[in-house]
Amino acid sequence: MNFDTIAAISTPMGEGAIAIVRLSGDEAVQIADRVFRSPGGKRLAEEQSHTIHYGHLIDPETNETIEEVMVSLMKAPKTFTREDVVEVNCHGGLVAVNRVLALLLKEGARLAEPGEFTKRAFLNGRIDLSQSEAVMDLIRAKTDRAMNVALGQMEGKLSKLVGELRQALVETLAQVEVNIDYPEYEDVEEMTVPLMVEKCTWVKEEIEKLLKTSAQGKILREGLSTVIIGKPNVGKSSLLNSLVQENKAIVTDIAGTTRDIIEEYVNVRGVPLRLVDTAGIRETEDIVERIGVERSRQVLKEADLILLVLNYAERLSEEDKRLFEAIQGMDTIVVVNKTDLPAKVDLDEVKELAGENSIVTTSLLEEEGVIELEEAIARLFFAGTIEAEDMTYVSNARHIGLLHNAKDIVDDALAAADAGIPVDMIQIDITRAWEVLGEIVGDTVQDGLINQLFSQFCLGK
Image 1 (cartoon, one colour):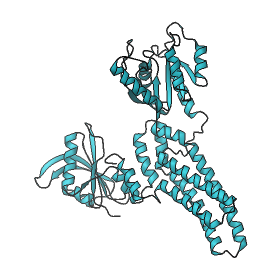
Image 2 (image 1 turned 60 degrees about the vertical axis):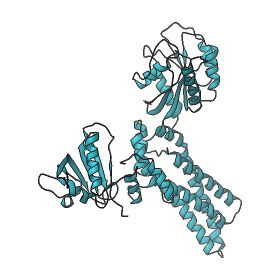
Image 3 (image 1 turned 90 degrees about the horizontal axis):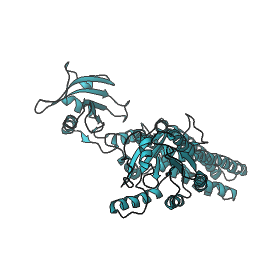
Image 4 (image 1 turned 30 degrees about the vertical axis):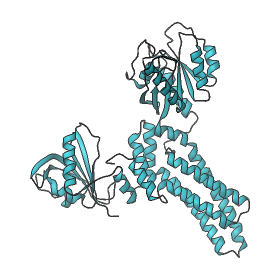
């Protein structure tokens, strides 16, 4: 495909040692040549691909020196977009990088849309749609595990498996076509139905294996929404600070210090937590604190994990018991804090109220019990799962939805075969399952969805 030449800043905005402005398209090298001057008078069009060159950017109209740069030259097709790509490495800083971008746009490049470089890689056949989506997963990865899952998807692990499933369905469809073309041969139908059932059963089982990884995969991709709750002044903010290992929350002996919700990402044994410290849930006359308490109640409803903090040095109050009632049926770890103080809480009563939920005792002041809490979190969400380097995780909500859809369609095909429905009718379900699986990798996806997906990417990627 032939596209116009696009340009964008590919590094985060702000001060830094180096920034990169990327060009991609048929005229990328020519545009760079018009503004690049090297000490030896090099012409980029005459240089070898995958080389880097020192020089300056000059405004051709005024002959003004714009910036001192290193220019990376990568010629098609061995580039990310399969187009000519030029990356201008300049000094980091808002003024410097914007001057470089403005010059390239002035010379004929167009400002890239969000995700347009990756979109071109997809449209030019460099990667499929699932690999494209993994690019952003890699950028947003919060833990090593999440990064490994994204890398596996970028390398095509999911694409390969989906390709195998679609191939099995194609083989089934081919056999059905033979049955339709030669209806006079009874033995053809006798062969078709068992083969169709065998292939569809295998596809269903493989989809189910993938879906079993979806809970862990989604956690690794999006993080666990983890809410810390408890009465005021039991140590919720201290727990946040201990897990984050920074003083993100104000810690005082004054009840109600946390007036609003504080959010922070933290890596706990490879599990990314989107940690939320809430205002203490209690009745209060303070209007600001009351707003914080209402927000806390809303966040609680949306949580994946609850960390309920109790005070080791106080008896359980009616307020504590109401919190236990509020989290019934939710994944919860009970944290009994302040074990450095004399014991007053009835741990047997805590165990009874906690039910099957884990209980961890801590003294956050003495930095005791945090390791045990981290282990409890990891066990809760990853205990008993197979973790292998070559395991294919499915983590994207779009992919999970399509896999569920494909499985349901294959189930319908198997039920139809069992009911003795003619094979040409069952063929409709098998074809639809093949199309749905193709949406994962982008083979059968609509243009509107492609545009929507890439619009969510960051500018310059």
